[in-house]
Amino acid sequence: MSSTVEAAAARPAVAGAWLHGVVRDADRAALAAIAGMDGAPVRAVSAAGLVAVVSTAPLDEYGEQPLRRNLEDLAWLERAARAHHEVVAALARRGPVVPARLATVHTDDGRVAESLAARRAELVATLDRLTGRGEWGVKGYLVPGAAAVSAEPAGAGGVGTAYLRRRRAQLTARDEGQQAASAAAEEVHAALCELAVAGRRHAPQDRRLSGAATSMVLNGAYLLDLAVLADFTALVGALADRHPEIKLELTGPWPPYSFVAERPAEPTHTVREPR
Image (cartoon, rainbow, N blue to C red; front, side):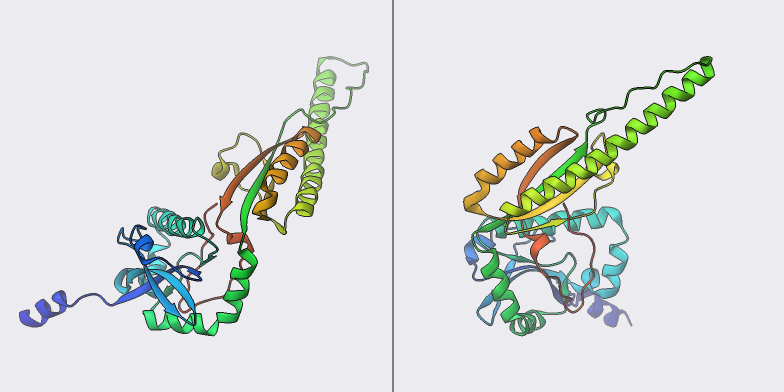
């Protein structure tokens, strides 16, 4: 009995492959300097003229059932999301990359190679589309009191009536400010999309996540030709001057998470990409 237990304990865990992203080619020496999920260097799996960059992922931690449990652990999830994003960002600094969804784990390198071959046309088209381009974000936050406020109507009445009148005016001003900010966000997004190759509006982040003091009214992502980045930056500044009811914040560059069509791999467990 003991010898059986010792043999099982000595048996190495079956290793899967956590997929970070797909590139056209990769410098193995450069990959050796990029830490993967558990701190070990990432590695390349080549097939169909493409390269998948993966981390070795023991299936006793990253297999389907253990991974489902781990994804419910917020501390584990935060560490995994950060490690995954840092790899994707490092790849994006070297050229176009198709980022994988967080927690895309294949059971072995053979499955990774099969996926590259099956999706080759789609992946090549996406890499072509991303070449010479990058993703930038523009967030817009409500600026309280920036919108025009209606004058408080005069009227007779006591202290209670005056209080109710002031309170009604405050609520009206707040509603008007939110409406003005929402309209401004629509105009800003439309203007930015004219200069970008593509644009997307994500759901506004909760203040607990954004850390901002006021509500987010715009959470936009824009795919840009690198040649127009200076013009895009200038346009964001001009739009901020034109719409004082919202505060604009330009972020990036980001890996092109927002502009990659997501398709499931086997097995895949999906959570929101980090932003």
